[in-house]
View (cartoon, rainbow, N blue to C red):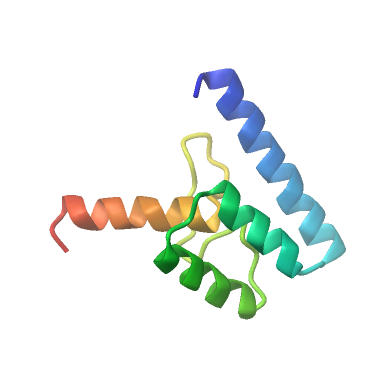
Length: 92
């Protein structure tokens, strides 16, 4: 993904997150299913994402407070994958 595409994607995620903060609206089942499909989430990732959503949390945030390269909060699946990669790199 080039810089412009990455910037646009980050901006879209940020706008969606801001909209959710303003409206206080929780994810609908269809939104979660679509998000997981877009992310091509594994079975384990799906289970963890559903558990996160059932707690009333936002899929466009993560419990580890991880940000992407542009300083925007990472979505749940992206942060989970990054965390798993870091764990594998450090043998934990």
